[in-house]
Length: 230
Image (cartoon, rainbow, N blue to C red):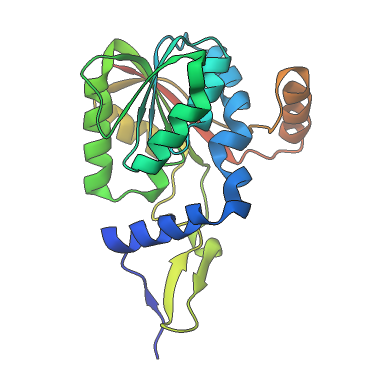
């Protein structure tokens, strides 16, 4: 049987992530849970977050951290009813939480799109950015994270049963600061900053020390983009 690239249909994507999220041992590996506090600190050095919206909020780790950081109202877009319920429980009474499969127009000051753009085809990207642009207030900000200049081929595996070749985390595209900036600007945003850096699993002084040591070594795996709705 000849090896072939897997066609990521919506059904296969759903099956992949249903299985991934069902494994409890992976609960502590989600990007927002591990790096959420470090990311919030990074963003706060550049902009005022105000009322946030997390596009693809999952089980609510980032929204819970934002509530912890003082946000009184938070919004999340998430397709899974189970994940929306988990988010509501995680945020609790620390903030007024609004969750749904879409968001009302102009409800957020800052939208977060974390570790998502590397998974999307052209149609899905266009739909996501249109929805985010609508949900942001005029002059609102968009924060994106994605792996920096990832070598997709290095992270592909072959299914020994069907010989389909696929990325182990369902990534379908790689971004660098230039390509991400050009795309987001084409979707109606002005760039505030786009940089390759490193986030840490820590907060406060330990976050700064950990990142400083890694940056000194030249490691910059995280690409962070901040834009403003034009």
